[in-house]
Amino acid sequence: MQHPTELLLQMYAAMTRIRAFEEQIAALFRQGRLPGFVHLYSGEEAVAVGACSALRHDDRITSTHRGHGHLIAKGADLDRMMAELFGRRTGYCKGKGGSMHISDISLGILGANGIVGGGMPIATGAGLADSVLGRDLVTICFFGDGAANQGVLLESLNLSAIWSLPVIYLCENNQYTEWMRTESVTAGRIADRAIPFGVPGIQVDGNDVEAVFDVVSGAVARARSGGGPSLIEAATYRHHAHNEGEEVFSGVYRPKEEIAAWKERDPIRRLRARLVGTDASATDLDRLDADAKDAVEAAVVFAEASPFPEPHEALEDLFARS
Ligand SMILES: Cc1ncc(C[n+]2csc(CCOP(=O)(O)OP(=O)(O)O)c2C)c(N)n1
Ligand SMILES: [Mg+2]
Image (cartoon, rainbow, N blue to C red; front, side, top):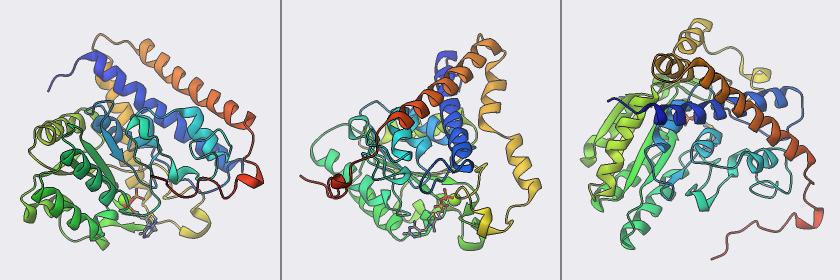
C-alpha cells in the first residue's frame, strides 16, 4: 500500500530516535557508566514503529526485557527513560526499576517486563477490561520467539478468542532465544500457533516498516470493531548481543556472515532508500538523524545531572496500590 510521505517521515524519525538511544546506551555501557543489564533493540525498530504507528495515542502496549524501542515508539520520554537507566530519582521508576520495568500508563505503556512472556496475561487482562467496560481500545502485546514457547501464550490466545478481545499478539522473531537459534528450541511456525484457536496468524517481514504497519493496521481495525485477536510473527534480527557484555561468557554463536546479511537489510537504511526519491530529501533525513542524536545527548545530560534516590526511599513504591 502507498503511504503518505508525512507518515513515512514520522516513522523514520521514531526509528532513528530508537537507534540513537540504543547506540548511546551501548557506548555508555562499554564505558562502565551504566549500572544494570541492558538488552538493545537496534535492528528491530521497524516492528515497534510500524506497530505503534497503527495505534491511537490511548491504545495500549505491553513490552519485554528488550523494551526501549517499544516505549520510544509509543512516545515515552527519553529523559525519564535515560534517568531510569542511570538509576536516578527523575527516572520512570525513580531509579529503582531500571531498563526492564519502565512503564507510562498515561501513554498506554503497561510496562516493560523482565519475565519472558509476562506481557501476555497483562495484555489479555487489559483487553478483557476494555471489552467489559465498553472502551474501544486495542492492546498490542510484544513478545519474542522464545516467549512463544511459554504456555501462557496458548492460554491468552484461548481466552482472547472465546471473548473476542481486542488484543494483538505480536511476536518479534529475531532468530535467537538468548544464545540458541530459534529453530533449535521451537517447533513449527510461530504464526501457526493461532490456528487451533481460529485466530488469524500472519507472518510479516519485520524489517519492512510499511509491511508491519499494514498488517498491524488490519489487525487493529479487526480488533477495534469487535473481530477479536490476531497473532502476528515479524521476522527480524538484533544487531547487538542478547545483553550488552554477553561476550564475557557467551562465546561466538552467530555466524559473521549472518549478521552482515541482516545488516544489509537494516530497516532504517531500507526506509531511507525508499524515502529519498519521494518528496523528502536526504537533507530532511539528515536533520531527523541529527535531531535524534541531540535528543539522546540531552537525555544523558539530564540523567547525569539528576540525583540518586535517598536511602530512605529504598522501600517506597515497591507494590502497586489500587
Ligand atoms: C520466565 C523467564 N524465563 C527465563 C528468563 C531468562 N531469559 C531472559 S531473556 C530470555 C530469552 C528471550 O528470548 P526471546 O523471547 O526470543 O526474546 P529476545 O531476547 O530474542 O528479544 C530468557 C530465557 C526470564 N527472564 N524469564
Ligand atoms: Mg528472540
